[in-house]
Amino acid sequence: LITIPVVYLAFIALTLMLPVVLVVGAGVDAIRWIASRTPAMALRLTAFGWVYLLGEAWAIPTLAVIGLLPKSRSIPLTYRLQMVWLNWNLNTVRFVFRMTFTADNTDEIPPPPILVVSRHASLIDTLLPGRYVTQPFGIHLRYVLKKELLVDPALDIAGNRLPNVFIDRDGNTERELWAVRDLATTMPDGEGLLIYPEGTRYSEAKRIRFTKKVAQRGGAVGELAAKYQRVLPPRPAGTLAMLDARPLDVVVMAHRGLEGFAEIRDIWSGGLVGSNVQIHFWRIPHTEIPHDAGDRRLWLFTTWADVDTWVTAGGDEGGR
Image (cartoon, rainbow, N blue to C red):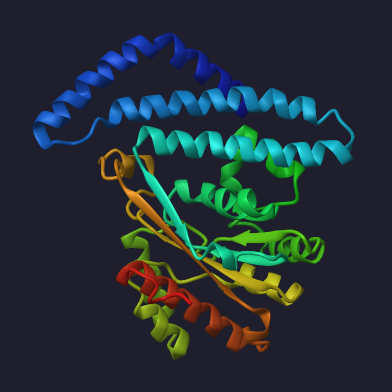
């Protein structure tokens, strides 16, 4: 009742005002280029915003129509529409910001069932698992995401129709973990799970604050966290809950090239334009994951140290 009208009003308003917005944006970009050689961000953000709202405008009624069908048809069609919506937004990002994406070691992703654990550094990286895991291998992913993303009505409708969990980070912890475990136990063998163990997008300020907090607890986990340079310490509860629920191979998804672009105001700096995002996968068999809770927690922090090494040093040094 709130987010859907907001989307359509915003789309109509931006469409009607587009000539004025483009003229003003061009003037702002010209001034910023003269002053600091900053790429044209006002025009790029306007273009992306309009295409994004257009995507929402067609996705919402399409989802509504699909929802009228029997569940046996609506669920597969919603998965297909999810991929169309994802590619719509990712292709727009690539074109508008002249970005390139490369992924290696993707042959280690299949077969399912798997648990994909991904680094989280930007608004953009939430689109990458669908493109590089679901699209090429047909592995439907069950997502563990924060509830704040439900402000996007297309994501809200499709995300709640499909088996996903939107975590209330200020809610009842045990209830949220029960939902995460249930997501794993009810998953067919042909699907996968996706979680961002860091729990929030990377920033240097967060890294300093969170690593200091974990390091103060001491022990091997604290020592590992204190050495992180480009990742946040993982919040292990959700990841370990799914591994407790059933034995799963873990597919690690590391990436670099999106650092410093956690918010729209970061993108405004212009550094995203022309950037190359590199994505690296590796697989950890469930037989190599410890069973003891303390050892499993240490394993996760060690794995994240490998992610940090790969992001920081480059190449495959941190991966397998």
